[in-house]
Length: 341
Ligand code: DAH
Image: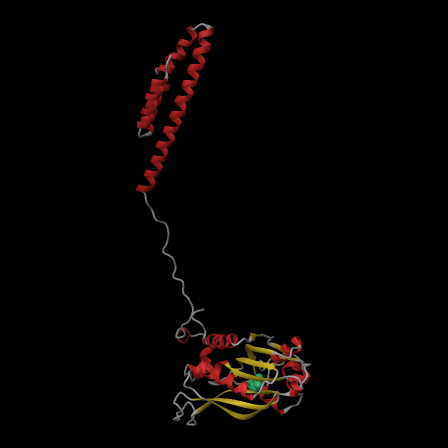
């Protein structure tokens, strides 16, 4: 008995069926009571035991093959139905995304980064220190002993008799020298500083500074001047000139103040109070006493240091007249400072 032609026909019938209903019709045709297989099964009882054995196996294999065709066809038709329903009932349940509001860089961060970039390119390291500092590092090891009159300018917030909110970033110099005990250092130290000031358009009890310290063999005033000239030109433009004026800081000897020529090209204007120059920072040659107090041999090392106020630089650079804008988070102000984060 050759069942192959029936199987081939069944396969093409199942393949041609396009719905579950069709498939059931085809199923009845090949697997139902009245199908060839159904009738063969019914005849089975009339066969001799030998015949039954032979045809039984044949019929069973035939049935299994037909059932496989049926299952395959059913799956194909079901998948088709799902696909059809999905394309017909297209429902977009997604909401449009929220716009991501990218902030702008804060002007104080911008200035700090510009200065950091300059000094990193010159081979300096960036050092940071704690904002709660001990009196010994904030004052004493910087040659500002107790009751020194220069402490008056640094009236501050004390935590207890020995600890205070640092009044400048200069204690980071002390910490770095004590820690490294090296006769060669090039560092800048940016950070927040505090003084007990009455807040107004040009004073704030909290402000930012960047400290610089270079120590090594034969460091002198010429090195300091060259460095400050580069700093001033990088921040304000190549057309600016610098001027050093004698000054006093306990931790440097001699000490200077750095003026930069005003944007009015020294013609005189309200910004420079008609002097042609604006003061921007304090600096000097590191006092030998500071080296000694930080464990370095004052006969073997020389160095220069400087300290600048970031707010002051930013106000001059961006021509601002009120320091408070830096702290009040007014977006109309902050959004004017574009730039990569
Ligand atoms: N620490 C000083 C201040 O806050 C600024 C300063 C001046 C720092 C001269 C220095 C320096 O390192 O050499 O007023």
